[in-house]
Image 1 (cartoon, rainbow, N blue to C red):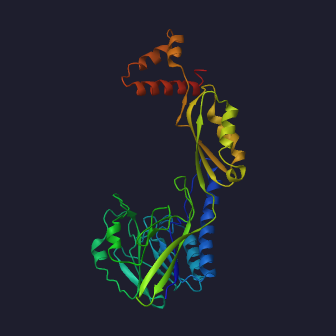
Image 2 (image 1 turned 60 degrees about the vertical axis):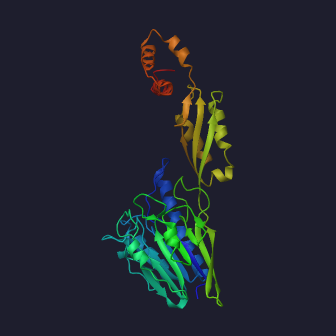
Image 3 (image 1 turned 30 degrees about the vertical axis):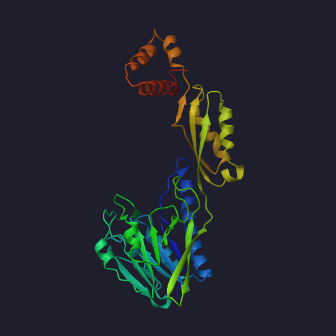
Amino acid sequence: MLTTFIHTGDFHLGRPFTFKQQGNYYGKNKRKELWAAFEFTIQFANEMKIPLLLITGDLFDSVNVLSMDVKRVAEAFGTLTETQVVIITGNHDYHGDNSPYNKAVWPKNVYIFKKDTFRSVYIEGLNTEIFGMSWVKNEYREFPERSFNAIKLQDTRYNILMVHGEVGGQGSYLPLDLKLLESKGFNAIVLGHIHKPGMAPGNVAYCGSPVPLNFGETGDHGFLVSRIKTDYENYQFHTTNGLNPIASRGYQKRDIPITPEHSYNDIIEKVLNCDTKENRRQDFYRICLTGFIDPEIQLDWINEDLEDEFYYVETDTSQLELEIDIEQLLAENQNNELGQFLKALENIVDPEVRKKAMIYSIEAMVGEGVLR
C-alpha cells in the first residue's frame, strides 16, 4: 500500500544559464546546484525509503541535452533500492523524434509516459494507478479531453493524475481546467510547468522547480512529500502535501529609492544596507534604483564597486531619472544648438512624453560627454 511519495519536476538539467556578471562562472555554479538538488532528491528517497517518485516534466532543459547528462540521470535512478519512478515529459524535454529519453537505457524501476493522450500504469505492490500524458511536441493549445474523459478510476486503488501544463492558461502550454481535472475524483493531482510551489484544495499541487532558476522565482523551493492515510473501513484515502526545502542560492530583488541629495557614496551605502553581509554573499541580487539622481553622478561604476560585497549583483537603472531643471536649462541655452534642440521637443503635445523626451536626450548627452 502506498504510504508516501515524492512529487518533483522542472529540474531543467543541462540548462545554459547566462548572467550579466561573469556569466560563465555563475552559469557553471548554477548548473552544479541543479545537479546537487537532483542528487539530494535521490538520496532523500533512498534514506527515507520512499516507495514512489513522480517527475512532472522538464526533467531536462532541452531535447538537445547531452547524452552524458541523460545517462547520469538513469544511473542515479538505478541506485534507488525501494523506489519506483514515473516520469512525464514537458515542453522542454518533450518525447519527439529527438527525445532525450532515447539517449539512455532506463532501469526497470523507471516508467516513462511517451504519448500525448492519457494512459495509465498500475503498480500492484503499491495498489496505485498513475494516469499521465507526455508532451511529444513543444506546444499544446488544447487539452486532450477525449482521452481524459475515457479515464475510469477504480475506487479500491489510490489514483494519481500527472500533467505538465498551465491551470487557467490561454496560450500554447497545455491549458488546464482545474474543475475538469478534479471531476474524476483523483486522490492526487500532481502538476508541473509552473516553477513556484503551490497547493490547492482537492489534493492539487504544483511542485515548482527544486531550486529557483531566475529572478522571477523567489521564495522557498524544494520538492513535495505527499503522505497518504488509508481508511480501511470505508476504503478512502486522505492525502497531505508538504514542501521539503532544498538549500540553494536564492534570487533577491531590492528597490532602492534615490534622491538628488544622495552622493555616489550614499548610493553605494544604501545598496549595501539592503541586506546583511552574510545574505549578500549567499544569493543573487538585482538592485533596482528608482527616483531621481544628480546628473553629475556616473552610474557606470556602481556594479564594479559592489561586486566584492555580493556573491552576485546586477543593477537596474531603467527607473532612475536625472534631476534636471528643464526651464533653467532652456533659459541658459536659448542661443545655442542645445537650446534649439530642446526647444524643438516642446512641440510634443503630451506633457509627460515631452518631459521624458527631454530627459532622455539630456541623459544621452551626459553619457556622451556633450553635456556636463
